[in-house]
Image 1 (cartoon, rainbow, N blue to C red):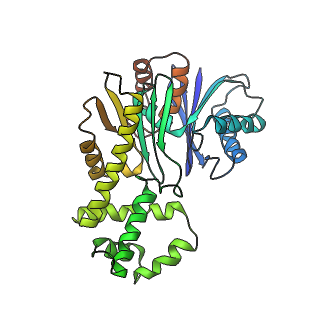
Image 2 (cartoon, rainbow, N blue to C red):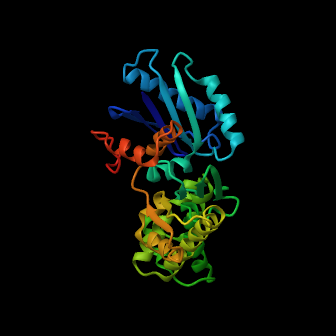
Image 3 (cartoon, rainbow, N blue to C red):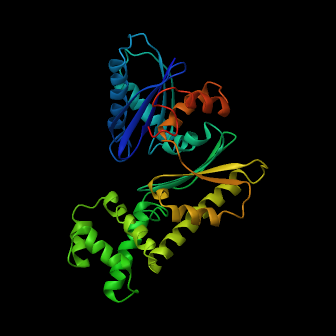
Length: 330
């Protein structure tokens, strides 16, 4: 029996085809599938095209059944998931027999990529940011409302924005000198900070602002006080969101709870270290960085739906034989 797991992100979409006996047998990538940054119809078409590609590439017969596990950015609300399914039913290749469809927010699969279906929490900090928790069929979230509402603390956009504020404060005499200024001048190949204005505003993109987060990490390595403060305050906000969710969902449990740190921001060791330090007062909280691609969690979605336990799911996804094994950089 085949499971097609799909991670539909805001930048690109990744898919893996899993067979219970053969393991991970095929993978592909496609364009973004976040329905709010594209459209619901476009998002559904991207997924439909991947299904068609899976059948064609693997020479499936028309009666080959597959199950779909979908983690799609922007589908955090039940109403959005229902709307997306309606669009998918209109655009999907009806000649292909789909055994079952499990649709969740991409935060769920980021969590399950590490817990294999077990309860826990995840902080995803990439261009945007959201903290999600799941316990006994109850789901709660903090943040993830977009850069316009609150600036998405912990996100690349937020860090990049703070870097820009710091260099313009230095320019205006409102703030201290910072290594961020020279790093940005060199990195952007500009002669003065004012030249950032057309770069930022003429074709505004969140990803472009988020790219400035890398300068914060570089400046912190140079012991720049402004950059270190930005990282420390960001870590506090990420940790605070984790603590709020922990108290909301897990306060009455005495079992260890996994808190997964996922997304590009957590590739920086300093911010991971600071988040762990902020949460050290909660001994039952096991803070770990994501080691597996989120698309692994989309397969775990279906296996959990089929009644497999986390230990069984982990073993199934670990004993895959070829390049598909977890922790091998799919």
